[in-house]
Image 1 (spheres, rainbow, N blue to C red):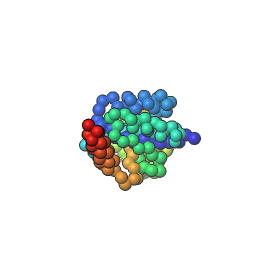
Image 2: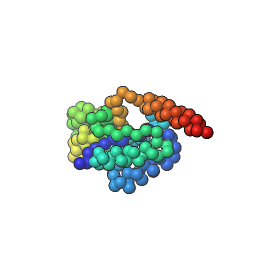
Image 3: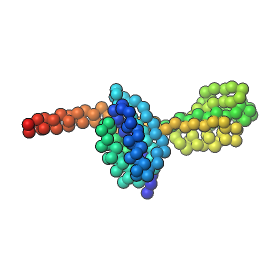
Image 4: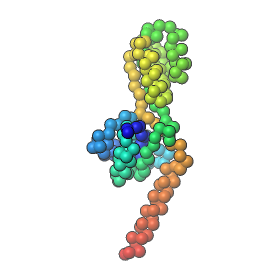
Length: 186
C-alpha cells in the first residue's frame, strides 16, 4: 500500500547530485511531491528533503540505490510520525476581495497565519504548517480574490537523538579500519 515517506539525505556539495537522484526516482516511477535543499549543521554537507508516495518496500530500494551514489553520505527514510516538519506558503489576495479589515483579521487569526504586506491592490499572507493546513487556508482565500499562491517544499528534522555527526564519525572510523586492513595485505 502506498504511503507518504520523507527521504532525508546528506550529500557533499557537488553539482549534479539532484539530477542523479531524480533519475533514480523516475526509473522507479516515483513522483516527487516535494523537494527541498539546504545546508546542514555540518559544514560542506547539504541536506535534501524529498517527499514521495510509494510502498515501504520501494522506498527502501530507492534509499539503498541513492546511498550508493558517490557524493551521498547518508540516507534516512522516515514516516510522518518520525519527524517534525513544516511547509511555508504565501498567498496574495486582492484587497477589495477581503471586503473589510475584520474579515482578513478573522481569517488570519483563525488560521494562525500572518500578514506580510498590505497595499491598496493586494494583501500578502504567510502561513506555516502541514499541507492540509495550508490547503485549508487556500480554500478559504479563493473566494476572496486569490491572485497568487506558492508553497515551499517540506523542511524536516528527525525526532531521533543520533545526529549526522555521529554517523559521519562512524563512517570515518570504518574507513580507517578498512584502510588498515588493506595496508596489512600489502
